[in-house]
Length: 491
Ligand code: C2O
Ligand code: CU
View 1 (spheres, protein in one colour):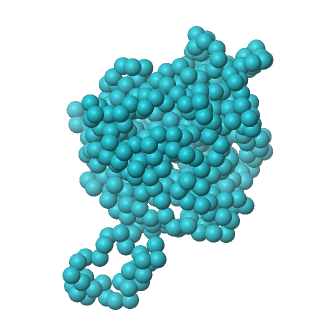
View 2 (view 1 turned 30 degrees about the vertical axis):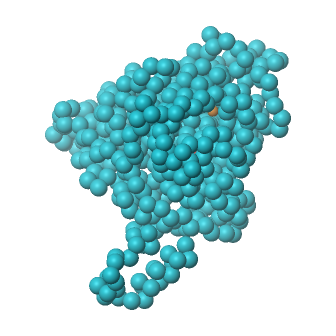
């Protein structure tokens, strides 16, 4: 860093053109960020609910929820100075971006926490286009749960043609009637089940009113699930969204299964949404993931403007592929990853019907009955309730569970032996989801977070080309904090 700053000062002191001409080589790109940001993590107060309700005390970046959108072009270099004005240490993780290990923002593993009053400068190139986000990696259930998260968009060098490129950061808060955030983070009972699911869903930090669109327009909608625990299953009534990317990575354009766009915590999906309704018509976007608890997220409200010419479904944009090497399964070394722990994991899978568990819980099903004695399946010491390969991780300073030779291909066979959903995230790499429940996937989609249903499995493959110690963990933040994380070393 000192070196980088030195070079930069030099360039500022001399005239840029003269320097470029005089030097035998162009200055290393590494010394000059293309985009610079300053993020200040601090308490703030924002109108989450609106409509005459009081503002909400939050923790946030630059006084807003979500934090400012960081936007750059593929291949550009980003420098972000993060100042901590919280009462506790923090870090920033650049979720999904293949950064050098020292920039990954994992406290005690890749850096020391940024203490109160201190500033840490992150700097890296964005090798791949896509929809990403940033958030703390310390005391995550509370820091993210109180509003510390923001979008990070890396544009393609030639972005596909659309009328609007929109980002929705989906949030989920547990609010009291006065719109303040309920305390009681890391409640043990919740931690051992679905995690802290809130009662107030926000789009870009506001309880949404309506989504205004013009008839005929084609929208690229980038969805980011920044919730601590909530899984979304979005249906766009009257419309047929087409998925073009998962977790920032291009995928063969396709309509989502059953018309429902499913996003576990930390997952992103880019959609092409052709606005096929008539002027002044209205449609609902419904979140029906937890079947007994479907609710209207927001209305699509068509303006009275004259329709734009309809776009043809034959001319759906295709995103250019990103830069990660394709894993060759023939040479892949297989590693089993078993997810264990939590409530009721000792029971047979028969009674767990997809999202119904959550619905039963929140809809006032028989909690007592489900939580009778002995259901914690070997419940452990101090907050440790979730495991990877039998080990509950306490804190981030972990010995590697698996070591991969740099450049080798790994296949992680992840088996969820619990009664709960787990969105499993790997740092430093994107992987291809090559099989689900032993069956090859249709799209072999690239992702950095894969949602695994109770008792199900996913095989993911990647080339371990980014050296360092990388987290693999569940992105239900209560599960992560409760032990469901591990380190994979690439050396
Ligand atoms: Cu989005 Cu380890 O994090
Ligand atoms: Cu989990």
